[in-house]
Image (cartoon, rainbow, N blue to C red; front, top):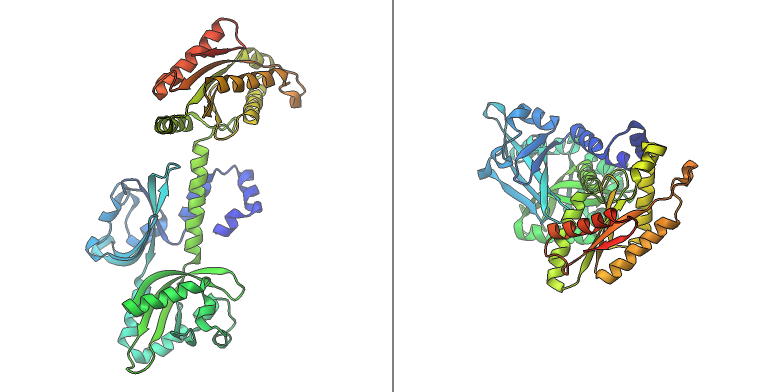
Length: 437
């Protein structure tokens, strides 16, 4: 599914259907066969997909609004892996009628642009079948060989050197081999199956120390060279004294889950970017402006570098709209935004402040440099013919107000107010010029 969503054809279908990224995001979640929950930054459940309801037997209202850690046995948590943005553990999930369901819970962090946690996405995999398989393996050696051949999970045995002793058909299919015999002829054995050869060396080292690994995520290489993800249970079998230990493993295809997780991360990043942009002009919006100003003020206080802010208000723009209509008025604003982008280089940026007002932010610019930049914008606007693509020839101008931090103000509110006041004085005394705080 994740692969399909990325293709150009799918992108055209999304545009034709008018789908927003948030619609794609919701469809991916709702269609997932794995359980999925979305948590806020306090780890309270805000959304669940049908797979969670099917697994637990609960209704949505029984889960949404509860803390995630109240839904499982905290005294039965066994951590599988943990990193800065990822946590994976086994536990027992509370089902209806006091059922305890063995599950693997994988939690990933969704971060704001600032790096702060915005929430969490939680995948839930039902381990009932896997646990039953493991229990069956322990209970009956006689039934083991028959189940080994017919199991839906990939199973294998290998020596520490990498030589493959035994693999089952499911494992061969998972890695794209036509038969078990073809797979066992690999010159490098098990080492050839790992996308990163160092990964197997790491696994062997862990097995020598711990004796087993549970629900270990590993990236393997198919016969055609493509990567696939497996969720593995490894055991170092030392049952035969005097013999070299043997690695035994059960592997579940986890590729779809990993692709879904990455697709959700991409959609989340797209949504974050869209939430900081103005839909009409493509410039940043006021939400981004306030966050950026707070960051710039903090940086300026630390290093002493100034920055300047310019309020920009279009002159007599209502007359343009009255004469040429609202659609042409919107197009004119898009073209003014294009003028701004052509002259403001990063880390500077433009903001659609509302209506026909804009804000320009110039990090590192003192008042003299900022004045030169504003004059450049004003001159280019004067030279530009707007709405030419519409067969019109419209001339536009604006009034500007300039304020500099920390020279003119010591906080965000004061800086915005002074720039606005400087611009307003120009509007009252002739327009088309630059006012300075």
